[in-house]
Image 1 (tube, helix red, strand yellow):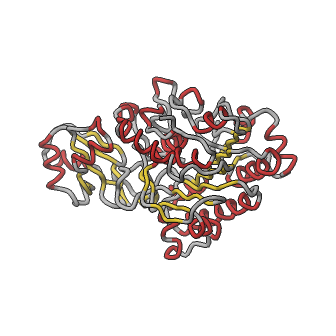
Image 2: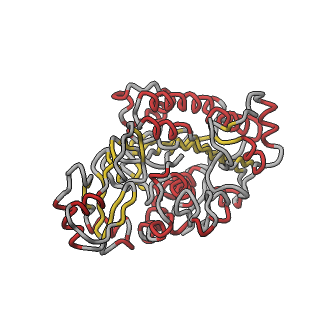
Length: 416
């Protein structure tokens, strides 16, 4: 899951501007009609946390042994990347994928609640201000299930194991899940899989839960969030030997789910954000101080901005210098389109493989939370199954995913 360097403050998040309400509405409506008025089918949505789109696009170059993901790209519809929402972190992104709106609209502004609201994660459904797909499906008489989907504690889901934890170790503690899951559900899974009730919930046990649901409960909609790749990509960097191995293991788990599918069920594989290798940290505020430049500069790990023209001018002059770490100034038109409330500010993103922060000795790692249009920094979307046309879609926006998923279920969503 997210590391501290990727987090944004509440003040930052409140100013997201929803990437523009008009943009959200248009993308959501377009997504709802993405595959036409098709026959209603069941749907399994598998989110692989941190699966950058290059894992699918460049599978041959990376030497990946991922037969199940390759099957989706070979036989189904998959996109040439998904443009995320600000901030490009897990909980806001997952909430966008099931609501079709951006963080300021659905209310999940970060992974964690602000300190003034008690901190901790946005565990509970009550924090979600927009209607999620699982609510719309249930209201339409469909049976719903979720395994580790963010913001689903106390959600009206027929079979629910929400993402929640009190401890982190080799996964998330099983005890916390038992407190908040649908009563009796985890015991039923354990009856089918005796190895299920281990100390930690990990991708293996999440997959066992999905296989149980597919074989015994047969929901119309299942949402599952696989987390383990994200942990490895943070620790050793995306596309590293270990991250690739973890993704290949995830592919094996996807294969187990696909073997248990009923004939009338489609599979969507999505992810919440791209990933970038981080080789070093740079501190533009300290570099400005040493250069004798005064003025305010707000710095987050993946973004820096200022309303001071003199500070912006200095950053432009020193762009590309290692001490400053400044890569690109985001054009004003792009700022206005992606983050409207920041209009009038000067925004800068780090150089490639650089993150803003106090320089310190460190090993190569991985991160996200970057600007959604950063070069080759995209999330994943693929759809496979009965009635799905084989095609390569152009780059899509994350706000369109909820409508695309809804069309498989025969629902018009988000409501226009």
